Image 1 (cartoon, rainbow, N blue to C red):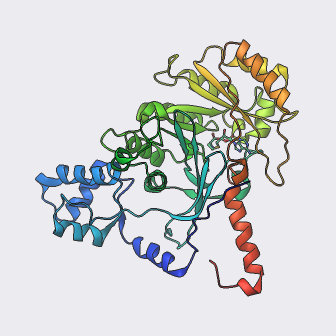
Image 2 (image 1 turned 90 degrees about the vertical axis):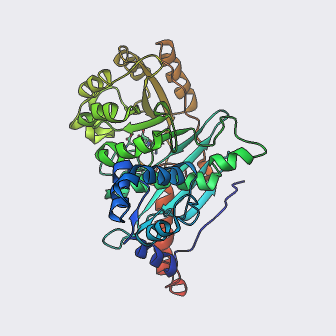
Image 3 (image 1 turned 30 degrees about the vertical axis):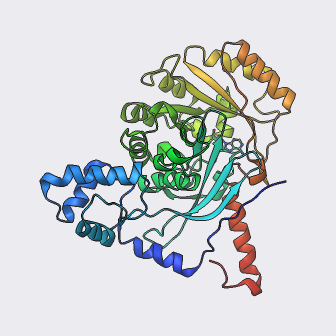
Length: 405
Ligand code: SAH
């Protein structure tokens, strides 16, 4: 049985108004230290105090998880009032929060209104395992790539997320999980790894390397040792293969790289991941080979979605081994998560096992990613579509008209 907690705040007018008002404020999460200092200077904080005040804000926002300025007890009352008047540390609005029987959590988040007054939604997933917890976050609303098997691609392109909107997802997940140091210290049964969220993957909605500036800033903030302190080794940016941005990702963030490969010939990959027509497999693999800091301990993850009769033959497995021979790599075999109207089916389990065996025998680690949270529509983009479908239905039902956004 699916256990679903719908922690939904209905999309009522007051919430929207709060968000509209906050649009006038400077959202502090997402700003790096120099930008924070600039904001403080704008509020009249003397030059010699800027560094120290920025550090205090940093600590409150990223280490303590403060959601208001009032609680920042080591900052003067006068400055706190000014901060409250001009700045915000607001979280996205939770439209839906679901919990799977297997512990996987999924949130549908509504972002504060943008300059056109539009409130967009993105998804986020938390996957707990024995010794780690992985938070999967979004980098864009919608996606431009149109990978044939991906549900987000059917939803059209909307916009990039700001660094603040990316970081706010993590802050919200930490609030919901109780994943702040001060809370964990008092926890009678703390998680094995000392915290709930140990790993971050940019594998939610969007193509992170089409939003590089904001994603890179977000990675630097996540990895900062005086704040969220998530090791760069545990932050993975997944790309469909935006080749020119790959070296920069390594140089500017030191994050781990994942490549959505999904095919072993250009012919099949052109079909599945149309971006391949621009950056074919050979170029993509060259960029991988040159990725900074690779070693046996720091490998590139190659994601490979198992599509029945499309990319799952023995010959594909053998080609895969050959292609990755000179790259420190691991392969993540992902059972295809079907969605209504998708043109593909997931490979049979025996096929996936055989494929994994060939890859393993070829000397590559090839864990099969166990499907998680299927009961809560964990496939990329599904929850958002479901929410849109429901709202469209509600709009068509006269009795419900005006009751929801
Ligand atoms: N745009 C980036 C990150 C988002 S997709 C990228 O392409 O890597 C994250 C991963 O989920 C990608 O490997 C993507 O190919 C995979 N994916 C998307 N839809 C899926 C589905 N229905 N079933 C299984 N994996 C899927």
